Image (cartoon, rainbow over all chains, first blue to last red; front, side):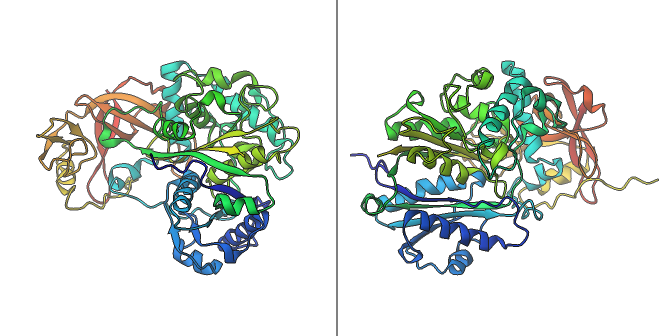
Length: 384
Length: 129
């Protein structure tokens, strides 16, 4: 029998910090507040936690953070894959739980890029050959969008529909940074940041954080919350690869998605709700194609005309307003994607965006720079 | 007015020192693996394709086409255009486009290497042919 995480790990606690601007708090404090929130949501305590998962946003890394939180652990993981680190962590937590290495895993994210500068990015062996050219999120994703338009005829109007859908959802989220519903014209009329991406093609910058508690089937069933479990997970990465066969029109999602669907035994057609990281509008278009919701090059058509709006389109997506309108703590969208998917599966999303009988959800994100080197991670979740 | 170098000097290391020495002579080098025959960039001592250690330096013509680009409209140093060039020898590389009207850049446009000074070895950039 093939080893699998399918059905062996439950997401018992979720917490999205309500703040979007936290000049009066420390980053470690935000991690702790999120941890408390997720444990309280699950009905567990700090003493129950025996596994801790954090990434590059944790001040000093896993050792100082675990000590600051006062955790007593038998499993630690600090895999850093940018904004999708927390979807990767979800998979790693499930593996650890399935293997008996921990029974209550805590995952935290927090940061304050709205209050102060981002921590400097660590460089690798590419440093002398790339750094001087000023790759930022905006222009790295801009290069992907430019090539996607060149090869497939994708338009700025199509990309704008992604933002329009996010804004339709955000109007119902009292914590969302941007709650005004916008139109395609609003997006096209916003200032060009890095061609072809306009300001409204870009996600918000917010302080804040989130946390998750992942546990065993036995512990989850002893708690009072609706049961949400993992059925599939995948992760991968993609970079310039020595400059060979460069193709910016697809992401590592082509490798993280299929194993997650296969492990869960489902296909994109079965998915009732999808949380897909929206660092930029183009990110969503590329991921939808890579995950098989539509053919390569058809993503622009897929997102047009409100197809991602809950109650309107075929694929309800990012019903909290996503990174484009709601929240993007420390410029990392992975954890909020998981949180909204769990809300949907519990039936706890806002009534205006709740998907009826939502029993199967997809979570997917990328981390790093889509146009340079990035990771991707996919998870399939179901309500029991 | 003297132009101060606008770009950071490469730090360099034993694996890439030859690349930067050649750049000082105006030569643009790539690496090729003699085991599998594949070229790559940026240069590694171990081939990223077949993992052989039989990699050799090769002078590139420094010409190719724009694969993609994005014009950053504002930055601390003004607008700049980042992009990828696919060299005639095969590998693609990240760069900036310089010495041209950035508004006229096009995917598929032919470009060639041009070195720009730093306080150390010069850095390769690309400009339309």
